[in-house]
Every structure is written in C-alpha cells, then in structure tokens.
View 1 (cartoon, rainbow over the protein chains, first blue to last red):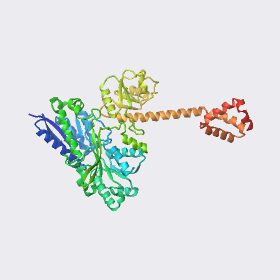
View 2 (view 1 turned 180 degrees about the vertical axis):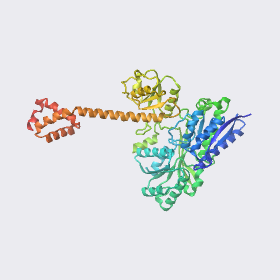
View 3 (view 1 turned 60 degrees about the vertical axis):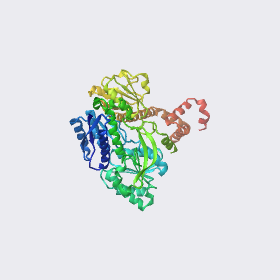
View 4 (view 1 turned 45 degrees about the horizontal axis):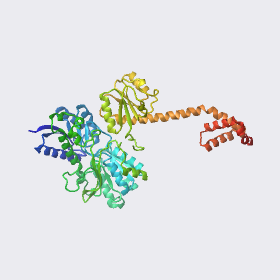
Length: 357
Length: 201
C-alpha cells in the first residue's frame, strides 16, 4: 500500500501567461501520474489544485488555503515573479515550500522556495556573451512592466555598459497591453544590433509579429541582422507567435531539439520538481513533515543537486534559434551552478570580453 | 568580485555580533546565500573584526565596549539587529553609527537590501566626512592665504599680481592654494634662500 502525499498545484488556467502555466501544470501532473503508477515507489501524490486565474492577488490566499485546509506542505506553482513574491510570506508562516519551475531574474534565495529553472547567470549572461561577438553590442531592451523585465534589462544594461556597448532604447508595456507601435518605431529609428525581449504573453506575441513584418519589409531588421533574444520564450508559445517566430533566439536549460520527452523547459522543470520531491519524501513517513531545509540534509537531499545554500540547481546553458518552426540548439555552454546574487567570480569568457572594452 | 556592480558582495566578510540565537542562523543562511563569508562573535569583537566588510550587531543586548573602535567611528558599515523597539535601545543603536537595521525575528529576507543600504549610506557618510574635513582645513588656512598674499603684494606690487603668483605657484606644483600659501610663507621666513628672486621683483 502506497503512502499518500498531498501536493499543491497552483497554476493559473487562464490569463496572460496561461500557456506557460499549462506547460508547467502538464509537466507536474504527468510526473505525478508516473510516480503514482510506479510500483517501486512507496508514495503516491495526491494533487490539490487551486487556480488563481491569472489574478496576482489570488495567489497568496489560495496558497494559504492549501497550507491551512490540507496537509500539503509542498506546492508546485507560480509563473510570474510577482506571484512568487506574493506567496512567500504565507510559505514562511506555515513552513511550506514552493517548487518554482520557470526562469526568473535572480536576487532571491528563499528558504521556502526551490528554484528549478534558470536564473541570470544561467540564461541572460551567457546569452549576451554569445550575442556580442556574433551580432554586436548595441541593444534595444523591452519588457513587461514588472520585476522580470526590469531586472533582466537592468542586468543587460549593466553588462552592455561594462563591455563598451550601448543601450539604444528601453521600453515597457503593462502586462497584457499590445500597444507596441512606439517600440517598433524606436527600433526602426535606432537600428540596434539586437533586441532583448522580456515581454510576456500577448504583448510579446504582438511585438514579435509586428517586428517580423518590419523585417520582411526592411532587411536591416531581419533575424540575421538584428535578432530578437529572450530568456523567457519557450516552445509552449511558438503556436501563438506563428511564422513570426522564425529566427528568434532564446536561452534556457532545455529545448525540444530532437526526440526528448518534454515539449518545453517548463514541462521538463515541473517534471524534475515532482521527481525530486518524490525522491526526498521516499522512505520514512516523517519526511513528509520535514521542512525543505531538513530534507536537503538527508541522503536523498544531498543527491538532489539542490544547493543547500541557495536552493538553486545546476542547469545546462543552451542557446537555441527557431528554424523552420522549431528551436534548434546553436550553442551549448555546459552545466552551470545557479548564482542568484551573481556573487561568484565572472566566467573567463566574460572577463575577456570586459578586458577588450 | 565584479567591479562597479551594485551586487559586488561575493566573498565579502560579515561578522555577526550576537549571542547564539535563531536570529543568527537565519541571518547566516541569508548571508551565505548572497555569497558572503560569515563568522559569529560574542560578547565582544575580536581584533580581526577591523578587517570585516560588514558587522551586524545585537541592538537589544549591545553596549559600547563591544566594539574595538571609537564610538561611531566603525571602519565598515554596521547593521543593527533590533528586537525591542524601545526608544533607548534605538537611540543606542543609532549612536553606534549603524546605517541599516533588520528586525528580529529574522525571517527569510531583508539581508540583501540591508547590506546594500548600509554600504551606500556608509560610503556617503564617509565621503561627506572627508569633504567636511577638507573644507574645515581650508577655512583654517584662510589666515595663511591672507598672510601669503600680503607678503606677495610687497614683492609683486599689486593684489591682482599677488593672487596670480599664488595661483601659478599652486598650479605649477599641482597643490592647493592653501598649500601654496604655506610654501610662500615658509620661503618668506627663510630670507636668504628667497632673496635673489624676491629682489628682482
């Protein structure tokens, strides 16, 4: 008889980033099904689902509901950093843990969160390092108006200045806004070497379509000349972008480039969350009541590759470009440990770049 | 460490001056996650504390003799760990020269911003103190400048020419007007060395 372990699932089924939520949710639920069907496992997960429907103010109360009304101590969920910050106080109060499966901007190492996707030293910095010699150092920065775009663009700006590059423009849109005319005009006027796009959802789709149309008219804005880069774009949104996705460049820990199991890195990270949690909870029943910090000190915890200090994981650094409708990996930077506060020494290649400037 | 970055904290050394306590472990956890080296001392700071980059101290049980420097003269940013928000304790915490605080119980966040705010305020205060000291010295040397100008008027014949001579003296030697004035007075007090040129003027 398997031991039943309740686990919270907190993803928005609707709203402006529902595609990403769906991908994460699918990865988590599929993995739960596999664990439950595996006779070698001593536990089975019981998913307790709540849907904040894309409303940031619903995350805190729904997280509290799960932790208060059910025995679940672990929650897999949240997409935006904003929603993650909303649930952390509740997790602190109840000793719960959030398993977070999307890229984020760093500068956090909560004792109540496990970060299973990439942070800037695993996505943005390697992406820029690869971009500069290939396309140039004059960038245009866009983003949705919240912490992800702000912080990614701040780091990009700082990196560009450090290597003698230039920021030709920096513009933000409210989440959900498709008012992209001004950005396109500024890009046309300033002719950057690349565009760093940290818009999310419909804003991003509208921008990418308009920019592809510009590129079709004017070769100065074709992907070969001035590509769009992103640290948050994955396979799960390609359908929404359609033909305009051709030539987009993204950084991430996983791309569906061949016959792998997962459609996107979100699905892969959510799968890893469930399997890692299952490994931590196997064995003694009391494990389900242990706080994540204690779980990480167990033999399974030490094997989990979750860094006990920062709760981040080593991630492969991959850069991929959309070619014929699918991501193709164009550069592989190896496995890199998460460094959320960028306090570790700068990698050699980046230091060389800085010396050149 | 990364030069010029706001996040230039990797490898920095933080000392926590606090008796063994849950606040210390919560604080250490956050500091280690940010990438600092951490040590704990109690009840007084050892000599090696002078080389630390940050000192966190207990504002509840703290007292002046814990610190191996003059009051408010810490050579690094200080961050107060405040549990009891009593006016007397806050007054004492302020008197140490602390430039940021963290409230106890210490939770899951707050340390990173405290580090940046403490360092920023510490550096601003240090720059301001240096400027004030510099200005004080300049004011103190007003008398020197006046005396040097008077002396130079005798040699050059006019106030304008005297000022001009003093300015050239400072510019040639790349020193301040006050220092140049000092040199003029020094030469004036050694008449034999200065006589030939002074006589020609």
